[in-house]
Image 1 (cartoon, rainbow, N blue to C red):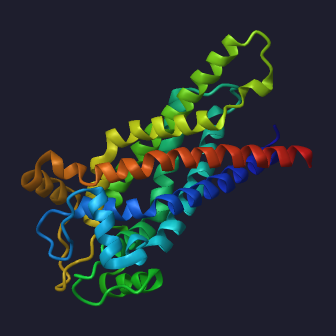
Image 2: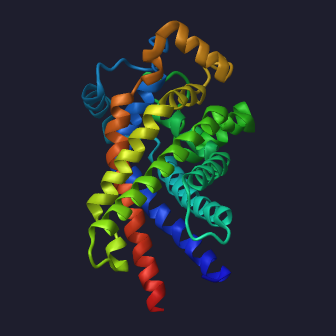
Image 3: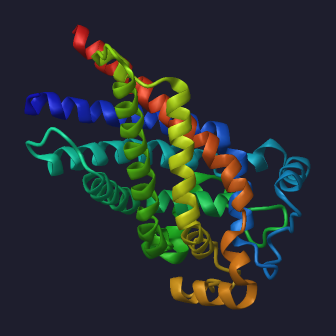
Amino acid sequence: MTTSQTVKWRWENAVAGSIAGLSTVTFSHPLDVVRTRFQVYDGRNPNLPCYRNTPHALFTIARSEGLRGLYAGFNPAVLGSTLSWGLYFYFYNNAKQRYMGNQDKTSARIHLVSAAEAGALVCLSTNPVWVVKTRLQLQTPHHQGRPYSGFNDALRTILRDEGWRALYKGLLPGLLLVTHGAIQFTAYEELRKIIIDFRQKQSSCFDKSSELLTTVDYATLGASSKLAAILATYPFQVIRSRLQQRPNTYGVARYAGSGHALQKTARLEGIKGFYGGFTANLLKTLPAASITFIAYENVLNLLKRTKTRD
């Protein structure tokens, strides 16, 4: 494969990743709203209602806030997810090709390093979008002060009242969450390779077409790799969401930084505090991960077939 062909494939990875991200966020956004509210709820914020569980939260939000409440922060979520997945797949495949060099085969180490590099670059690029999304999702009818009217208003207001640094709140736990993508992609790639190798050995007349996995395979691989990543990294997500909350009416943040959020959560809520919204997160992310990889793999295969015909 020539250098120009490699670059084209990387752009196709980005397009496939963007479409996958858009599919994911459209399907799962109400659960994302519930997850975010559970993550930041500590029983001491009067702006946040108390929900008994995920179904109760969905029902309460739908009844009191309507469809708009269930899709609060949808625009930045679409932008952030589409941009993140597109950049992630692009940076990931770019890094993988670079680390492989002239090798024909990849390894777990290459997958891990490539995923970590891609995650860090995506985090630096998209953190402001996630701050705005979190702020919009946490607005409720009980909100004190002037609410944000939308993405642009929130962005302008944050810059005016808090400065550009506020758009990078939660960056440290966000960077630590790079391990999430690294674990997910490494697990996905390694499990994928195991299945393909197994089917090669089982096939008496193996040909290249039998390498192609089915939609069920992509769904299973996506969900399994996501579960492994969630179990290992979920507390980082909780800390990030808590840091990204809007300051009170006096402009004072609820947490001074990652260390303070970690210490305060552990002291006042225990281990349970680090897993707020975990059920909603599983309901959101496992099917979403399956959809993401189904969309990604199928769009990528379609683009490659189209390119081959051309």
